Picture 1: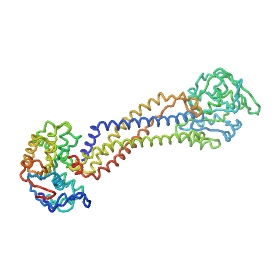
Picture 2: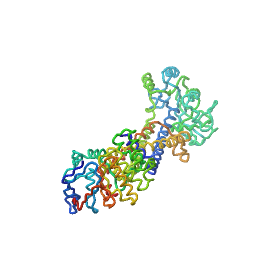
Picture 3: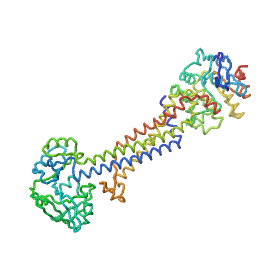
Picture 4: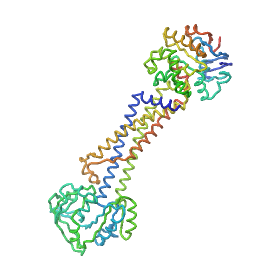
Length: 403
Length: 221
């Protein structure tokens, strides 16, 4: 019996071409646009989080107690190398870097800005977060007196590649000291803190300038392959201030959550539109075929068969729309993932929110699976209202009307 | 075979425009009969045909198919009676447009759950009798009116129902096709021993049957 019903449903889905094309086109286009938006939202959030992790916090960072509240270099980690060795022995830790940061003032000939001087080991940073990818202009061969400066800070100080910049801060003994750098690289990390107020140079030079021992750091950042590592590190380093990414960047976490909400709202709106579209097309299609259904009822086809047939028709069309929509969506996502959406025209505005000029999309299986279930659900739901019109159909009325 | 006792049927009952469509109809139709219900337009012949075919309900009276009273059955039970015991031929052919001729003819047998090989053999057999064997893979929209009506007859007869009810089957056919249809129906009646009841005011149909039942204003004359 079901074979016969499915066969009729298939033929109806296939032979009523204008209806099928209209529905499939509508579902495909909606789905393609929805997947692109989902991918871009997710990609935007993931990109910001990824860059923040790579340029700063990693999955988890260790600080001396009170450092984060005071940003005073006297709250530092003295046995950096021992801690790094211990961290590297933990399963799942993929890389570790130590940094030494001093708060002070950067000056050009005409301007000065509050900023941070961060001493890093660029080789370690490359392993940690491919730091060289953040270099917009110049390179990381800093030499003896070179530095890399955040893009916005350079802009505010009106400095460019090759310019000199002076950093002034209080050293470990409380004396005000200045140090001069020549700008060798300009950094664009889309991490607002770094781009707006950070100068990077070799760690040993910063430590000497600050007058602290070489084995000292203010932050040890760790990349991990699993969440369980984070718990282990937090447990192991309870004497320090060990904070994971979410705790260090609540705004980014909040933004990611907001993007998820945007995605859900977009998903709901698009699926609602799809539902209304399918409902409209199926409604007209079913009402157009009242006579046909009446004849079938007269011949011995039960209402339950009609219901099953119409549900299958909607399912076939929904699946058709899903298949084409998935192909279209995947193509769009693939292009957006590899070529991005260039929003350079809005670069300044986007930079102020810590966003990159080019948005790259994510591709996740969940986009397709959730769309699949939503379309199937919408397809099934859309036929129940028009089917109500058929349920109480008296075949004689239809036959009489057309005789 | 079919027995109707004191059938009453009203349209718009209780309203000012009430119509007494069937007025105390009692009638017996024997197995293998070839008969026509006739009368002027609006006399109640289609209403009576629909009542026999349990397509429409009646207000009072009894309808027996064999020994079974069928007028008070549930909707699904009536559908089963129509599926298994009655074949219909309508004025407007009423073929399923997305099914080809072969599928239209086998439609009822498939609903009945008949084995595929039996269906295939029966479709060929009936198609040969009705001379539509070369149209089996065509969609109804590609057939002429006469060919479509033959397919409708084939569909009605293929499942070997006890009775075929044909409502104005020649109304949309020219005289040549009308004659061909009636000849075929007569042949089916003879070969398959199937009871055939026409509702028609077509003189040609009335003159072709063995028994004529006349109705006027819902009453048997």
